Image (cartoon, rainbow, N blue to C red; front, side, top):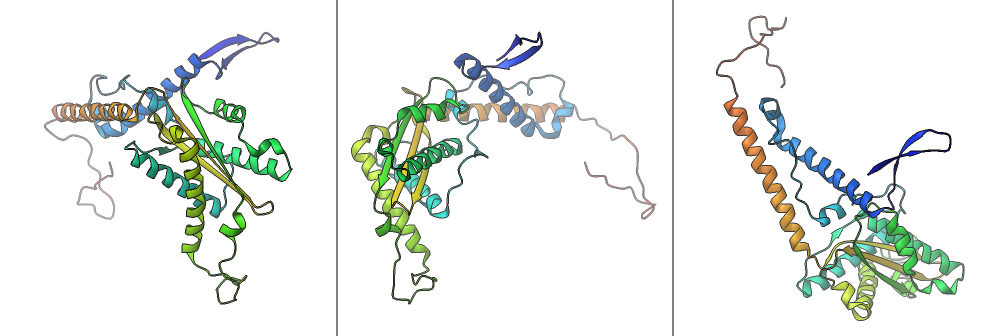
Length: 306
């Protein structure tokens, strides 16, 4: 995917244009092959020294686009750091989405930390706009979503669905559970972890229920494979914002991707078995090498860690 270019100062540089769909697809494919090569080496173990050919070295080129989606699903180091309540709310929203999809007999969604980071940025952007009194921030703009997704290392051709919920009931949901002074918190409320889970559960039910009524096709999208949920709570303006992003390839199902991944792992295991068989055949009949003895045990051969 790298291209050689000459700068104005007549210096040659190698340039990777991530905006070009073909170049980005090539780069992700190479990264997937390197990842498979690393997995293959772990499966081979120490038998790699006894092999005489590359039959168990070169990874298989058979792959699905869903595997490219999952290449960089790790957390973003520069992303927004949610609070404990926001993190609990995100987990509850993901669980409720999975329940809705299970009712429709659809496969579950895998968490993509990169998408979750993008969703948090969108939710925080909505929160800041609400605090600044910008009336146009009541809806999530598709251009903002496309801008963030274009910066992520995702293969070209994917489809994304955006879900946005804006709550105005934070005082009643996250307010004090008791004001009689009988609780264990400094403000007089009950120090009960179940109350926190219940609060996040109520807001998650409202958000997913709103999406199920307004965007039922997006929630029950059969081609979706990965999801990311971000939440932002602002107690100053009494607003809560939840953003969910779902991505997949239109027309393809997750079951097809799972079949491809299973066949790839089976191929790796078959290569591992052939590597062990080749190593056992190449194993010498007699031992050889130097004997090592230490001052502590001069009459016994030392056992070295292999």
